[in-house]
Image (cartoon, rainbow, N blue to C red; front, side, top):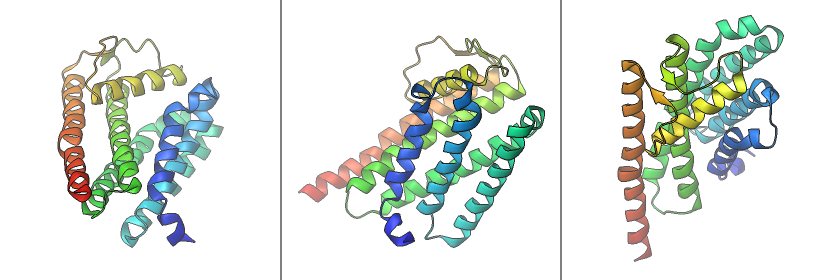
Length: 220
C-alpha cells in the first residue's frame, strides 16, 4: 500500500499545499485559520512523511514532528493563551519540516533520470515549500519584533487577516514581484526580504534550468 502511494507522493504533497494556500477562498473566516489551516498543515506533514518514507530515520523524525503538532493543535483548541505560548514551538516545528522536505525534494528531482510528471510536480511543490519557509521566517520576526512589517493592517487578534497578508507578502517577495503595500521596516525584516528574494531566484535560475536542460536532452 505504501509503495503504491509513494508513486503519487508529489501529487499528494502538492495537493495539500494548494489547499493550504487557497482553502480560505472556499472556507472564509477565522474558522479556516484556527481549525482548517492547522489540519491542512498536519495533512501536508503526513504527505511529507510519505515523500521521505524511503529514509527511515527522516521518516521517524517527521512522525515525531507530526505528534508534536497534533498535541499543539489539541491544546490550542482548548486554550488560546496556551496556543500563543506554544506558537514559537509550532513555527520551529514547521520550519524544520519544510527545510528538510525542501532539500529532500530537490535531491529527488535532481537524481531523477527521466523528467516526468513526478519531477514537474516535485519542482512546483519545492517552490511552494520555499514560500512556506519564507512565511515562517517573516512570522517569527513579526511575533518577536511587532511592527517589523508596515502595511499588514492586522493584529494577532485577527488571525485570518494577519496570516493571510503575511503569507501573501512572503510569496510576493519570493517571486520578486514586490507591489510595495507591505514593507519591511526593521533591519532584520529587510535582511529576511533579501534572503527570501534570493532563495526564489536561485531556485528558478539554477534548479529549474537544470530540469529544463534534462528535459531537452531527454527529448533529443
